[in-house]
Length: 124
Image 1 (cartoon, helix red, strand yellow):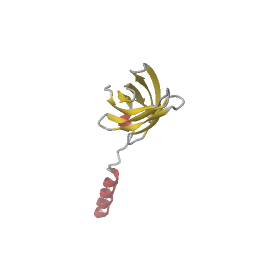
Image 2: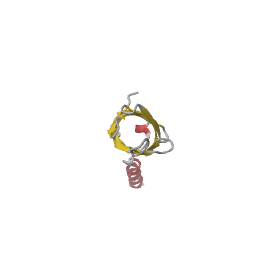
Image 3: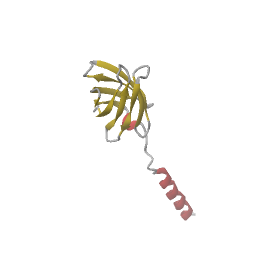
Image 4: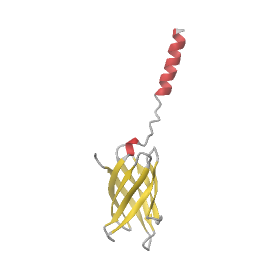
């Protein structure tokens, strides 16, 4: 009986210690950084506990603000849009070491613009 208990306990221990620690928790908070390409500026966005992403991009070239909205997965992948209604794309990935990067496009105003972005999670 002891051996059976030990065997079951060991099996439970391995199942309970799964390495699948992907949660949204590490990404919740405010992120900021810069973007460049055919336009440049800075951005800020907030990731909520449900993975919803909301924020703005500010063009230092055109002195205009653009809305960012989207979703962050438990793995840190971002899928989102620029503008409201959607005028472009905001995508990339956040890492558990508080860094993020990706790409963006914006078709308004014309001509369309695109580039890359990078940033980090703000300290609380």
